[in-house]
Length: 514
Image 1 (cartoon, rainbow, N blue to C red):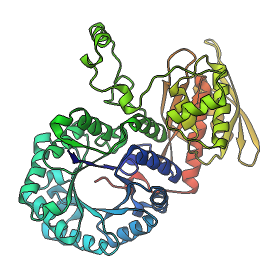
Image 2: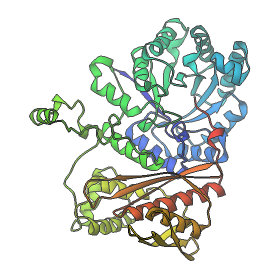
Image 3: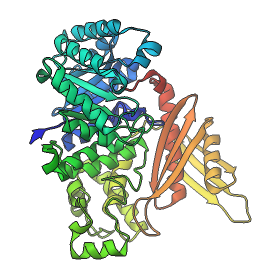
Image 4: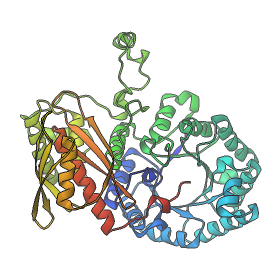
């Protein structure tokens, strides 16, 4: 079977999802997990967008040893220079150049004719060849580009020295038959096409990103680009886990495979969800909470007789293992062993900190499940710079009383601040008290709660999205008490607001989507 390479853009295109802003530490943590999962190429960011993006890409480049690290660049010399600086220290650096080619982009965005587009792109590729042996070129909005011109652009990129030519369906406009035909035509008509790899980058605006990507594979694509959980601009990108498991499950049909460690899929999905603050929908293919649930009596009967009647993928395949829970009598060694089995290899100091949290949790609930442990460890896997820390909270509530919250926050210098506030509900009162204590003016855009596991004593996970002066950030908190989780999430988001303000990064408007 032929090898299909995976190009992950979670840290670049995925980060452009509304409300998602990953700092350098968080990008490194996600990149290391992508490396463990077996991703071939990791697009770490857009270095020219801001000094913060450049530094984050460089941090990823220095941390990753077994995957190619990629920086995005417009077809401009200053962008190429920024990417060159960002990728210093990378074991296997690659530059991702792009320039729009469709009629609508040529006329309204670039104000260039076809010849100018060809000349600009060729000059950029040739300039980049001075610094990079691996160059991917993307004709942005390729799906809406005239097919004969797309062949011309691809031939030019090959002559100029590109090693990969990516065909992006930038606005998710294509159907599988149309998109597949592009690859078939390029394979048949472009001279020297055998010298390079063809890649597919699909968006999900019409819900066809995965189908289009698979159609590209059937018609000769060597590489698929996408994100974990399908996050990204607008409706998102191709969900890589869907492509991987489609090739795995229907290997006899596609006659192609990836190098992914399948048992790392679920952990990668949960890590990206927690880092970005974007919950995975329950009915999401492969990694959703209901992906392996069977409610119908007929289905349940079939499953009891033979699992394959209604289950084409085993949950264990993607690393979703159900084990007996552990409790407060479990020792440190058993705790460490369970974390190792879940893929968390912590040092002694981290184990001690996590074990202390586990004991507190075990005192609050009878049984601690694997999902509880994942949430516990990943809560502070990489942290935001803490300007404030929640020290104490109390909420008074009755259905005929005014909700009142008292909170005490600790500042980094050790000073404590205590405030009281009322609100139209317990969470509203808590958040108003925190606002008074921090003196921050923010707008809460979203608030969501989900249960980590089952039962009335389950851990609750709260996600908040807040905005301040155009910057949108997320916060996450977990606790068996939903009000405590709410306060933790809000304080974490405020810390991110302060961190962004003191170390500004590029706004989403400064970034771009291929």
